[in-house]
Length: 278
Image 1: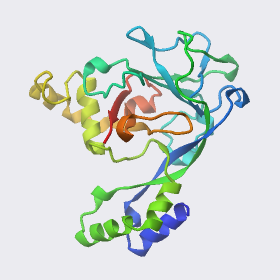
Image 2: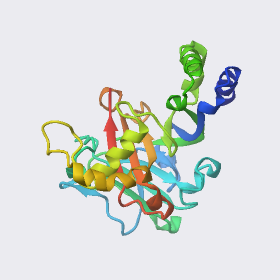
Image 3: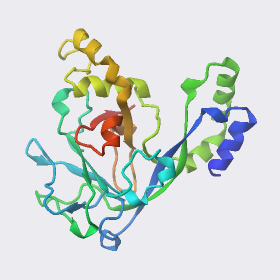
């Protein structure tokens, strides 16, 4: 089963419009020494440029997650939002596993961008000399789909999609084109895409979103910030990965969010990270 099989099933019920294309990737275990410096990978040690320090938070090096060689990314699936060349590096504190609902989580993740020469890259060990948190894996990119169930307003179409999603053959087909995601739309485990946009806008600007037990929600400031909610876009969704030894709590996922203007300007300094689980 593949993407075309899924689309055939959807077309048979007139539901193809709920399928949005997205860029996904899978992993394959690999010996790190067999990977060329600068190759896209999950886990292992990053190939950082000389002079760019390893991100630190509260005195501890952040854990290296992912490295993307942007020349390997299929451009037709990114709407030309990502830079055409260079490298993106994703770091996060796996041990503390902050959820991103408090402004005090700022710094618990970092996205670095380098657009220089590959000759400036060097494989970098953690500054605390600890072993890499995740096993090294190479990446394969492919076109997947996101089923936008919330866009359906017709009750019959909604019922048809529900019935189709219960079919074992569709579940199997979707599983074959599943994987970690770059850009595009997504359903959160606990919150919708729109709710995650809202959370990213508010928390990154200092409003606590952790519910009871924390600071009182600032209604006045939230009202002032509302116009910027839709500016936020998903940059990366990273689930658990058996190949890398990455196991989020309760089948959780990590979501990196970025303002569209920052993305278009290749400015990854103010990326905000949210974590959700079952």
